[in-house]
Length: 252
Image (cartoon, rainbow, N blue to C red; front, side, top):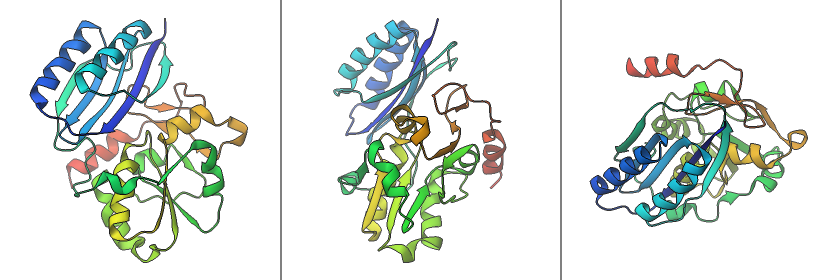
């Protein structure tokens, strides 16, 4: 028996967060769907798992609760990849700690089929917007490693290392797209002119690009009990380094 894992997010105005939280938690409990669901006034961000028939029901019901259509990425695993139901109200669905106009990112998305061409240009700066422990298990060839322990540290990295490159092409990527969705418009607000973000992130790229054409190297860190996935979105074999970095972050 395989369990279906779906990950999805959207930046949209949400009101009455306590009511939404209550409805989502009830829905997940009733359908035995496990995972983490973050909601904020700016939108939602979630990764959940369950039996395929329950996930299908969950998607339909969650769309009603959120007043939207879920754009999700999916994979499968033989056991549940979460053990609890978590629905949390946050100030941000991905923490950048900067005011961002998401609309500034319109027009910066790049489809997986066009990504290789863009990052193969030697004049393009390829920016991995993820953290150090994610970079170490896999990344795109020639990608810049910001060596961050938290997404909120990325603006400082840009200020110290990329601020003079405002006229250059910056191609950025992350796991599922949400960090780039926030960081692309942030860079636009700083005056960067040529920003490209990988639509759907690494997970969509691995799902749609044939292995022999892929420029991805290594495995991809994921935020569930699998810890990493390989180029076929199967459970990976590399060591999970996240605990060490999170402990270091607590002591900063």
